[in-house]
Image 1: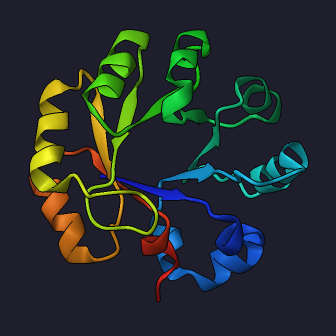
Image 2: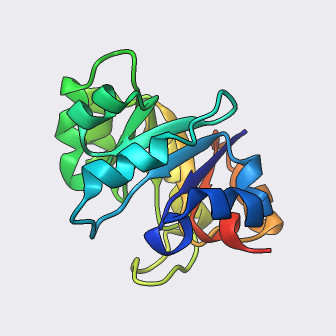
Length: 178
């Protein structure tokens, strides 16, 4: 099962602290560096990759050149960058963030390895949840493995999405809760 931790600057600005204090973060097998508001994205990504280990695949958001330069294992494209999948070197893991059928079809067309589909459950500032039925539809449409995302904070929710047939789950808050 994929356990995909998505960084949030307020939780992962100090990865040494995060790995020592967020016990669930040690369960993750993929970790996305994402900092939408950084004025120093390159430098922060360079600090982030220093924590790369063989147990966790490190991914960067949207920047192919920087991912290659710094040695990230993959790249996660926001929905408005899905078209860049076609420009991504084959050695990188490619994940596309999707929220609807059109975005899933674009990810199919451009060759994602995985898609995230969200939000499944209620989560702050992410719109109406798609629910488990919406997740099942996404799985039917996608040519690639689906990772459930959005509002996943409990073992019960993980169990529910896994029963739908996903490859795994992604979350920010699950990995930062005690």
